[in-house]
Image (tube, rainbow, N blue to C red; front, top):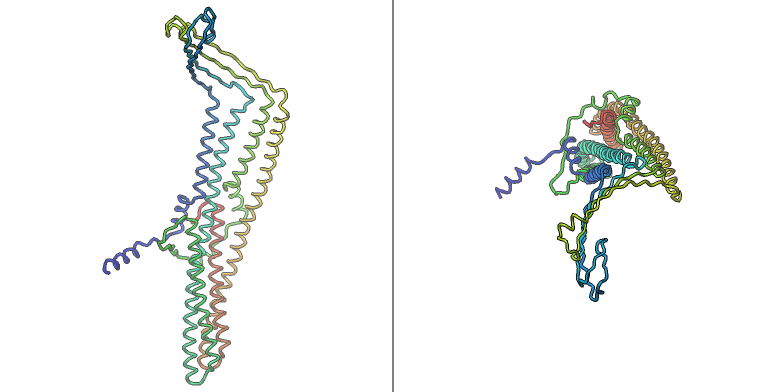
Length: 439
């Protein structure tokens, strides 16, 4: 028992509290979607290496060895072995050949060199896909993190409300005992207390759900309790200067990977057009080869045959396309359409980016105004509820007025918390789109 208690204490002391930075760093290392994109990056790099190697000559060696059986050879008849006429009556004979061949595409309309450039761009595109996914992941983590912070504060507000309702219920029981309150009014106080306790359970349920979503982003599947570190949040953080909309948008256009990704798509389309047009141009290649052979039907030694049967050759090939059943023209037209599609994508991405930033900006401004008003409202509702409570104790206010005051105070506190955290979140998102860093 003692060991169990000690081990439990040690576990409690070693319980990890995740900061926002911890969550982001862990997700960037372990998120499965991001890992899959990193695999695609490696695949794109292999395509680049292959296209670069295609610029070099190819070289191959070959050899073949065959045994033939002629059961009824004609005497005095010549037999061809490895290209030579030999007189033999061998029923079983052997032929061997050896060769080395090389080929090199000297020019194919720039297709190979443009393919190298295209694969370099594709590698950059894969890198930008990874950066885009990483940004989306960080954004989702920040939003959930702030939701968890807000949920903790909401639980505190609901607990304070529940404590107040419990006190009111106890006070009501005392007033029923002395005949100053009816049992019907007491039942309403009891219902209000029960509702406050239900609100606590509901807020805790929301908190657990947000934690579950955050664990899913982090790819955490163990049963160990997951919790975050609670940073200090001040009113000044919610009321800080909101970054200018155009400033954030201009910076985001230059740095956001999703915009750069589409721009690279336009560049890849230009290269695909050049590659497609190369189908109309001649292709020039050179080749060279070395071969020799041996046969068992020769009286010469094996080494002598290898030497005397040596053949060396080289040549140039030129291929001129005349009619390809419209294949080249269709490929060019499809590449042009692909470029047009990327141009539309770029316009759409810019519009979506501006809309996202504008939404964060509007939310930041609106929630700052709401927070200022909510703070005043909370102070006013707090003072009003304290006065109502005292008047209720003296019998000057009825149960309905007291319950309404409690509900108004709770609503004001919730509005203040919600607007505070939403203001902080949206301001930080604007900074993220401007600077690329979530603090």
